Image 1 (cartoon, rainbow, N blue to C red):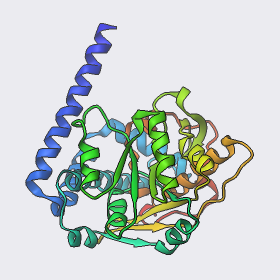
Image 2: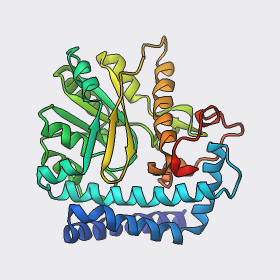
Image 3: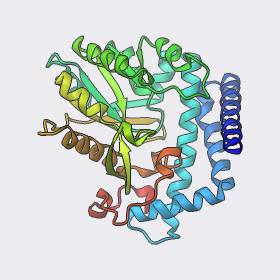
Image 4: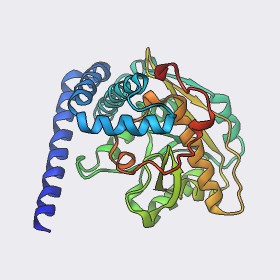
Length: 320
C-alpha cells in the first residue's frame, strides 16, 4: 500500500512539473509558435513511448479493422501524437495570455454557423458536442468574439494551477463551468441554456469511476461513459449539435452539424446515441484524436469489436 501511494505521489509530481514546464514554454514562444513546438514534442513522445505506442497501434488496428503492424496505422498514430500535443500547447498559450483577435481568427475556420443560428432561434440555447480533437478551445473563443453567449464545461486536473482554465476562459468572456463541482455545475449548465447560451461540452474521455457513468461500446472498447450531456439535453430540451474537427493545417477547421435526433424512451438510449455521434467524429478523422490520453488507452479492446468503423469506409486519407 505504501509503495503504491509513493508511486501515485511521484506520478502526480511528474505531471505537475510537466504542466509548469509547458506553461513556462508557451509564455516564451507565444501562441503562434505553440502548435509547431508541440508537434515536435509529440514526435519525441511518439518515438520514446515504444511500449505504449505498440499497444495503441494494436488497439487502433483492431478498431479500424486493419492487420496488426499496418503501416497506415503507425502513420495515423504518429500524426495524432503531433496534432494532439501541438493542440495542448496552443490551448495553454491562448488560455494563459489572450492573443489578438485577428491572430485567433486566422487559426480557425468554422463551418455550419447557420445550424447554430437556427438552433438558437428555438429559444432553448444549444449544446455543442465536441471531442478531444485539436485545439477545441478556439471554437468557443471565436463564437464569443462573434457575439454569442458561450459557456464551456471543463475538468480541472490536479496538475494544473488552480483557476487556470477558469481565468483563461474569462479572458474571452466565456463562462467556465467546472464539471468537478457536480450538481452545482449541472444547475449552471441548465441555467445557461435557459438564457439562450451555447454550452460547449465533451464526453469522449469517459468517466474515471464506473459508478459515475453508463457502460457503452465506444471506439472498440467497453467503458463507462458520462450520461450528463444526454441528461442535460433532456432536462433543458435543448438541441445537441455535433462539432467535427476536420483539419489541423493550414488552420483548424471546425464543422458544426445539424441537431442530433434525441428523445429516446430511456436515458440510456440518448447516451448511446451521443456516444455514437462522438465515435463517428473520431473515426472520420482519427489522426486528430488524442488516442494516447490515459483513460481510453487503459481499457482492453472488446472481445467482438462492433465499432462503427467495421461498417464504414476508410475515414480519412491520413490512414490509407
